Length: 199
Length: 199
DNA sequence: GTCTATAAACGGATAGAC
DNA sequence: GTCTATCCGTTTATAGAC
Image (cartoon, rainbow over all chains, first blue to last red):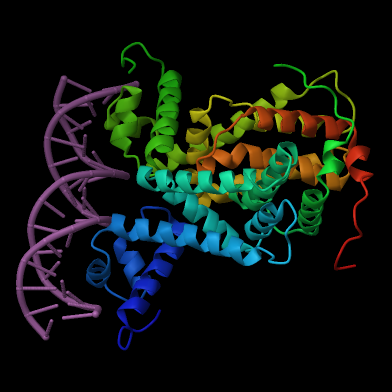
């Protein structure tokens, strides 16, 4: 798809990154340069002109993906919301945004494929740590934070196993998670049994 | 590792499947037959004797992995537990079993690598649907089921992003999830706001 | 039942034409 | 700035020896 003529280098680069995301998400990390290039409407030689190696293309793709999620979180941050948990609420909303069903699967497949490369895993780990630290400093009790983050992550990764996303039940749960971040005492004050082991 | 002589065909097959799981989990779906074979202590030719093609090896591996999870769930089913939610409790325990930290990452990497093959994705989807149906018939209110399954899934997939697993907070959450399956009214009777949209 | 040798295809990357 | 042609290493799979 896409023509060759009349495209700026920037546009070509973007087209190549988009093609790489689609190809790798659909066919795995070993989608060939030839495939990616053709999907972007350029030749393999043309791809190599823009990205010196496959590794370079992939690392750029990873940086783009991580930046995209960060941007989504920023966009979901409500400026009017200054209560504890505001960042956690943005995280929940950001994690559950891409409701375009099959898109989720491709996106998850992409990131997991990318994670199989050690260099990528390291970058992603550092990024995850950064987000975790920010969430931990968001003013919510740890027990509530653990719950809502785990549940949001769980909802977002069901397509990994082929499950459906964004069902009515999922949306209702997401709303309740958001509610809990505003009223953490609801969860904390439930009559929990005493912890079973370790002091 | 492992000698060639004095091994029954069944043992060799099992060794090859185990080697394939290790190699693919560690190095991706394109771990070569040569690597897998050497890891199992046989030659590439020997591998091909037992599995006619790489696809056949992989599909067998997938069937094995899915059966292993099912077996874990069965093992976690408490015969003395006849209350509603017994299957869900087994699911939560099974999902959170492999506490051997780095093992989780390899196992998750394996399944996501395998999922990049369409044939595998189809088999896994059918299996997930089967489990979902069983859980839905487990006698828990939908809202509680959705919560505990999502949270358990979320806990189990954090290593995907490089996060730690089985932290004290995680274990505490897991216990609370199990508790909720025995007392679903705790969750249901919380003062939730009315649903925001759709009738 | 397993191994060696080899065929056939494919992948990434380079050189240089246009 | 992009494409063609090509090299070279790797991979799957086969044929046939042991």
